[in-house]
Amino acid sequence: MQNRTLELLKSYHLKATPQRIEILNVIESLGHANIDEIYEVAKKKHSTMSLATVYKNITALLEKNILNEVALNNFKSKYEIVKDRHAHLVCKECGYVQDIELNQEIKHISKDISSDYNFNFENLELNIYGVCSKCSK
Ligand SMILES: [Zn+2]
Ligand SMILES: [Zn+2]
Image (cartoon, rainbow, N blue to C red; front, side, top):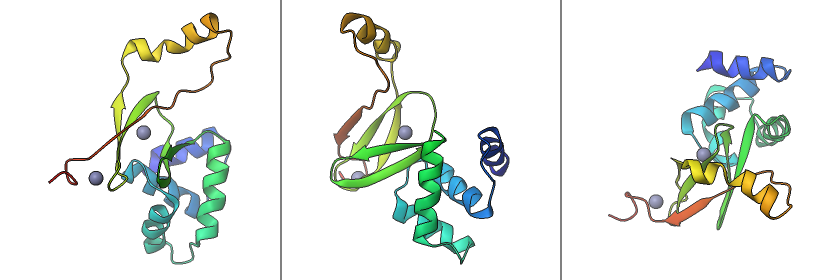
């Protein structure tokens, strides 16, 4: 896990500070996490970690497209390491976010939109809201 994080930072020419590495490791292990969750876990290993440091690093990692922001209804945004285009299942009770694969048709929707609507497609965000298995018990 550590190596992947270092590779990521190196390939984007970002300095691999211990705090930055820790933040990425936390996000990778949680999958999707908001600022508070990242801070809670990261400060256990790095007692000098502040909420401001987490904010600053998240901003830098978003700018470099290493992280993706998952904006949610009624919950704070969560962050994930950028990966293939996918959709999210979001629990409206606890805010739990789970990745789901998109089928090929949806993946290729970008081409159709660009030609059919003369619209420069950039990004697709799809959140499907419901209740997770834990909350429905
Ligand atoms: Zn839930
Ligand atoms: Zn995701």
